[in-house]
Length: 295
Ligand SMILES: Nc1ncnc2c1ncn2[C@@H]1O[C@H](COP(=O)(O)OP(=O)(O)OP(=O)(O)O)[C@@H](O)[C@H]1O
Image (cartoon, rainbow, N blue to C red; front, side):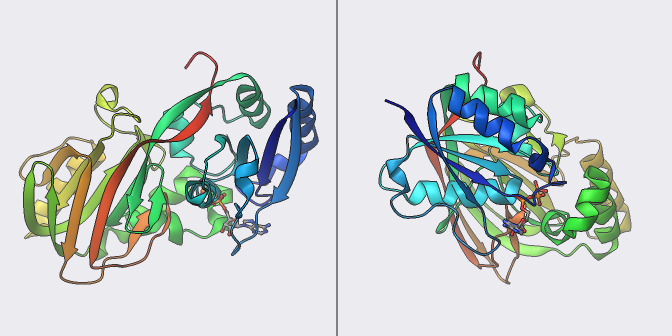
């Protein structure tokens, strides 16, 4: 019997390159015995709908926003189909971490031939994220950089926006309760990740990061008291050197976060709301994603 595939396509992600090879991709899936149902994503709509658990496989094609929205929909289904991802966005950290091809046809072929990898997913209050939940400096960059600028400048647009923000870095008083203890301080930045690539850059100690170990990697950067400290913090961030005077790093499977003021969060590069209280839990191996055959 043919395997039923729901193929979600964001025609506007990245530079819309997918349009040039869409028919080839559908043809490839059909040749591999999939019965393909296509659905284009809509800007404000829910891509995955109730009843989509009748499919054996849901494949989405788009950037980080499409990925996040599709995974959120899939996680809500009663029984979760396998998941495939064809990355066509600007940065695609999740795809980089999983070793997925940036060539859409190659990525599609890997989905047709590959095997499932059970990957951790983060739950941030009621929303899921695949690779990052973050607040503070730099984090507004990914969802505030206009789509047109991202398309023209790609990765450079993120860096330019980040540098533009440096003089306005604001700190937040936050407490983090996790499996290893509690930290309370003023922070300019915090990220909870499940990925070895963030913002298009490889994260330090990549070999120590597993996407199926039930643990997040947490990085918190303290606020600076003066200009010299600020410069030191920026330097250690740029050089990716964790300086224990300013930067905390630890692993945990859950976090309870309370802040004194509203903090805008980013989830997988999209705006995630500004709650003062956040519960984050690792949904160990909850997403069965198809990766390249030898992975
Ligand atoms: N059918 C559609 N028509 C127009 N816009 C759409 C459609 N479907 C989704 N979008 C919009 O496309 C935008 C881009 O989505 P996505 O984040 O997947 O790609 P990207 O921004 O190019 O990639 P990245 O986030 O990795 O940089 C989102 O703002 C989404 O609302």
